[in-house]
Image (tube, helix red, strand yellow):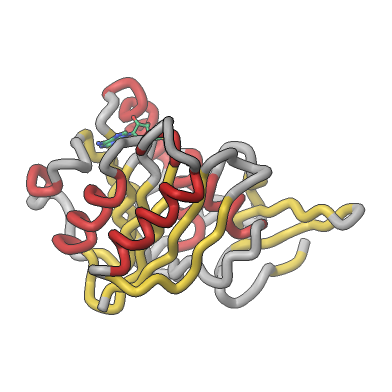
Length: 212
Ligand SMILES: C[S@@+](CC[C@H](N)C(=O)[O-])C[C@H]1O[C@@H](n2cnc3c(N)ncnc32)[C@H](O)[C@@H]1O
């Protein structure tokens, strides 16, 4: 097991026949490395696709939108470590139930049952964040992301927006959607990296951005 790179703290890898498998070092269990499944986590896919940075460091506060049952949040909880914290927003009560169980085991996660489209509704539950991470399949994905960055992201903080083209418009080509999202983002934030996620995720991309 080897450390990946200093840009990806607490992320390790094994390589077999030229194929990398990623792991995160478990914050809550000694000498435990948790396998990171690229089929179930777009952040893992983005790293394997060569994204230069993800902006998430030890001790960071992360606002995570679309936390689902907590697969990727659990790995980010390893990356930020015991001094970091993750506010995990999810609007499906069924998924949020699993998040509650996860948060019982991982003390640096707070589950929040809320709609990311209405960031004002959780203003009393979250703080300013070093990173805003979004992975939700909604038509107005970039609008939701920018609203949350405006309200909760610290100046100079990083944002990660995972875009599912088909949710924005099924009739348009994914590349057109990605270009449209890029233009919307460029008005508000600085884009520092961009990757399409195939073959891990079809018609998905990620934008890594920095708040001015
Ligand atoms: C693709 S899944 C996220 C998977 C998760 N990010 C991971 O990698 O482990 C998208 C999640 O976003 C949630 N979601 C969709 N729209 C939302 C909204 N407006 N507010 C909060 N959560 C939302 C869905 O219920 C779903 O659980």
